[in-house]
Amino acid sequence: MKRGNIFILSAPSGAGKSSVLSSLIEMEKNITTSVSHTTREPRGNEKNGLDYYFVSKSRFLEMAKDGEFLEFAEVFGNLYGTSKKAIAEKQEKGLDVILEIDWQGANQLMALDSDITSIFLLPPSLSDLEARLIKRGQDSQESINRRLAQAEDDMRQSANYQHTLTNNILEETRDQLFSIIKNRSET
Image (cartoon, rainbow, N blue to C red):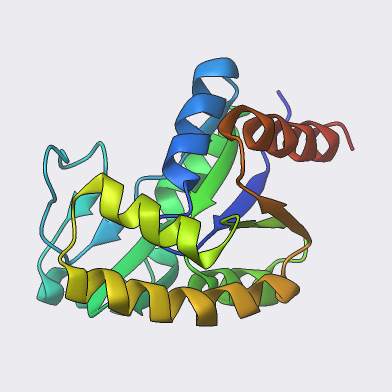
């Protein structure tokens, strides 16, 4: 069995990466995502082990010290990290794994492994991004303003990625992402 590949998908908060990935995974069963560890509190209906592994800051720092993460970063005051062991297990099963991580973690991985394919997902515009953040109803206006300010910085990082997609129409973006993954998996 061929070992699966690792892909990085980064985007500003609210650009639609979770929606695009959910649609892709429904379509293609040999593609999966990683479940990151985080120190933030669960939102809404998020489930431990499904959406994230919710851990205390002390536990997270212990895991980082023990080298359990492929990458980790602080985003909006919370820590996020990707488990080395979990990714390796999925790859050994022949699954292509998409890491849904921010540019800080992506830069760490791209510096370590040139075999990783990186993709940055852009919103059509900042006004579209703001509308999406408001529509999802998870954040206060203060939080939305902070996320929009951060989004501008995040989007500047897209130049460091191998591929850049604009998430205008979900199905088209999903198909473009699938094409990138399929082309990489065939090489």
